[in-house]
Length: 489
Image 1 (cartoon, rainbow, N blue to C red):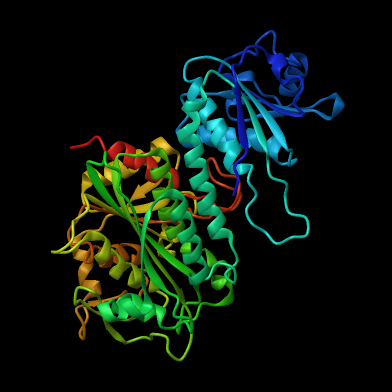
Image 2: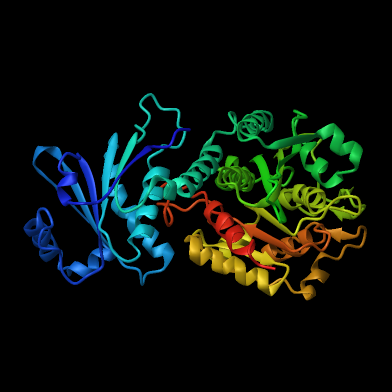
């Protein structure tokens, strides 16, 4: 995966775009177009035809096709809009150019208050959308090779932007791979490669080890596959400057049939994307290492299949998690919380292990969250009100919006079991996203904890900065949350 190269120059005059086949001009919000704007009369004519005022360019970017085959787009940047709305507008403007799959684009950002942030956003949006996701067509889409960016920034200012873009693209690329290409075995091989390149520590707990350790919840799901290639993979980033530690946990079900409670075809389609939570967690630790964030990160990826076979786990099985908790299996399609239970126990630390200051897990976990929010927000659960507020604030700042749900103790009786310590879920379906969170919290050793149910991992037509249906939601949010959390006592 190669990102488009960014060539940076100061924005001095509009004529810097004269040689660009595909160009975008971004102006500060205002009531009028600058008198020296190229093709000003043509822009005014288009605005008149569409019954728009110049200030509405902040919400509706426009495009002109010029002589010589050139295409020019125009956008105004309105700082009063939310971050999500600003990113959405930039994405729509950039896609007016990228839809023609050019080899290069030029973006000219006018100077002004707040315009440096606009330039960063434009660079990020162009990079993540300039890289086609993997397909197996005879004529795949052409990748964007170069972004000529005219603004007041320095290259060093763009280093975090490039790291974030690389992480977002990686998360989406992994999630897009067909299930016969990304099996638990090939996924683990890919992880070894990126860990080595990034200088991360790596440890793999395979199926046999986990069974011997007593990770019965994880192994119950993994045993349905004829390949014993499932594992919990542990990556670590330990900078000397670290003053805090965080554990990232990701659900990595490479394909989810539903097991014995088999999904119908309509709901099984796309289940190769059920490993998205692990892709987000992996991308986050890699971005944190590239940015050299002063935080120790342990990343735990629960990688398996949920297959149907004579050996697969089934309803009414009773299995035992790593901490001795017995779990009554109620529905085999609630496998995510099973693999996460043992993974959270390993990530959050026990009596003999150092306990992280914060645990965050990412998972495409419940259909209930899709019913509650659709695909434009992701839901979160927090072990404290302060963490919940921080999650929402990070969503507002990153443009990846989060809604925090309640998880009061009086939901717990629904998970009472007559034959085990706890039920995995219920068959009623009521508030399953909340019950899943209450179930998972039992396995966090009481650590400060955030659970992110990634209902916005895929959104038809794109979301925020991302034009593809696969959004990479959680990468920008996670990095923003860490940046806001680290300075806190």
